[in-house]
Length: 380
Image (tube, rainbow, N blue to C red; front, side, top):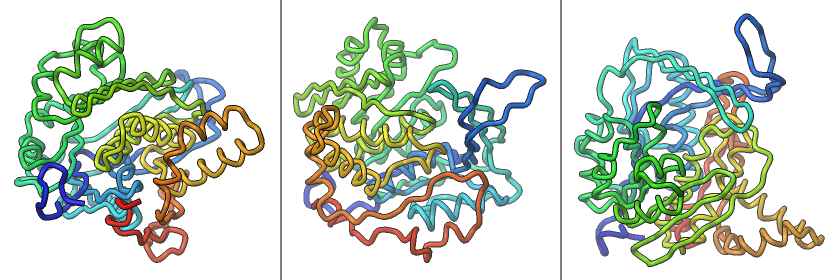
């Protein structure tokens, strides 16, 4: 498949291009009670994984998108481990990333409680701005950019990529001050999509409802998406004239870390494949729901094997007369075609340590990368 914005052109180097900071994430789950000063709380679960921009990189790569990442890595053991996991295990292209001597890896501890999380982070600015690693950027079909980061908003690499035909999927992130700088709407010029949650969308557009915010955002980008957590998602695709609303899947969530990144990755895949808007939203909601049932951010992202397992389970339960499964099989019938010809594999989940370096070895039979080519993935 050639670049969607440049018919007949040469194949871009990447499907998705990302840039940002990689954190070493330690996630605690299963709290009997929240921690309080002067006390010690034991939890039932813990996992470690690459975090930050790595959440997006793993999510896109596990869906078969050729992913390039520009990021700085420390030369400490955390940096060694994350570099190997991303490059060798997840097959993320790190040719635009760099290792920095004597710069320690930023670390985040996440406490997942009551369907939300609190985080504590320590780190220092990288020794070189990530934007310099993308001057000029390689060719790509899509870019994911966090415009809530002032450095990203000021960078030119993603605008250069957009000028070359890349579809830019923008997010803004949470504004701790809740000032909701409306200049971000101006910064959306040249972006293909904007995917804030409901409160962010209403804040930036100065509207009172998620639907009103959605329609206001549709004046700024071709694809406007407003996520509403357990209430589902709303979207308008001005390019096709579609407007859709999709409910969330009811699941037992244990860790929401990275769920929004998984949603965005699935939305990019569906858009690049030219799926109808409702199909894109349902697929993204499914991938996100699978992620929150695992812990560990990036390594909670589903692969095609997880999607196949879910679809097989739903069809079996539907055949047994389960009414909820029957609704799901009707809504997600498109998965049969999506999964045709796709090679599935086991994916690694977060563990309570940084594990052993051999665990990320591509020669491991349980972790062998899929052999399906990008052309075969697109044809499926």
